[in-house]
Length: 142
Image 1 (cartoon, rainbow, N blue to C red):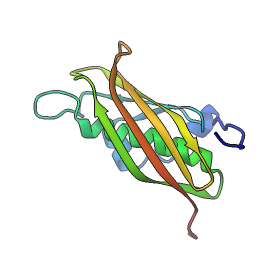
Image 2 (tube, rainbow, N blue to C red; image 1 turned 30 degrees about the vertical axis):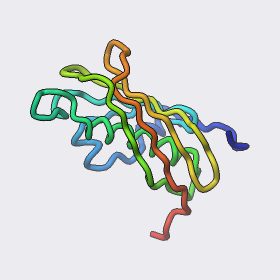
Image 3 (cartoon, rainbow, N blue to C red; image 1 turned 180 degrees about the vertical axis):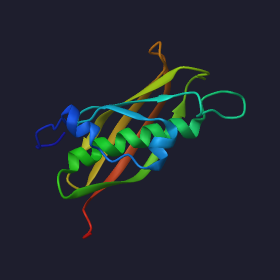
Image 4 (tube, one colour; image 1 turned 90 degrees about the horizontal axis):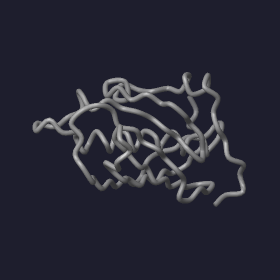
């Protein structure tokens, strides 16, 4: 997939990741972060559509969050990952509890990274499958 060694962040590094207002507002918690696997959880409560079901857009935000973090870890120090394509297929409804997203790489290059993100409910049933492609760039000057 790539000639770069896989990178996994320590728990302290995961805790220090910048989150942003949307991630905080949605209650997303990053549990594990690395170029080969990134995992996060999000509550269903507060992220529902008018029928009381997990909003598809919330699943997409969760997917883009874990895929972007994984891409940024892969990109390395001094580089950033910017999402350029996201698609999501919603398989089943969720009304309560939490959902978990796991991002695993499809292709890791120097300028582009693509991840599959699987979102599951508390019973492990697949709720959503997404794919995110990120452009990897040098960090702009401060």
